[in-house]
Image (cartoon, rainbow, N blue to C red):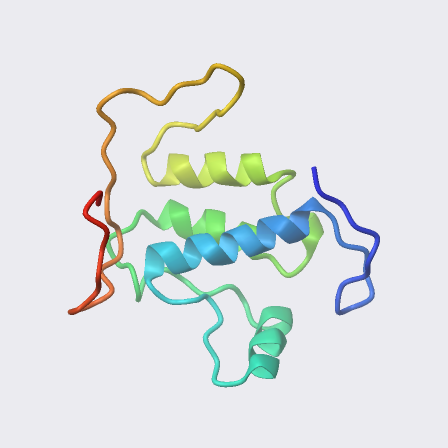
Length: 133
């Protein structure tokens, strides 16, 4: 568990829920093919993160279950108190919303044989994907 005593941009202490916010941003971009708060200037991105509601996946990824939107909205909540208790809880909820089983990587855990990957977002013509996809 990573914790720091440095304050956030608003002067509040940061904790694991800060990591969860970053994870939710990454998950949104992986699912939607674009970042959650796309703006032209970095300062505008920070302002949107502090003042705009979390965006919906409905436009960039219309085929996803609306439950994924609810999970991401909670992971991207402005107030850390409104987020999931842990990153594991967030990822389990997102996996469930996407129809995937929970992921546990404890000692001795082996992934199920023959698993497959699913490409959710198409990033357009010319996108280079590894052969393993």
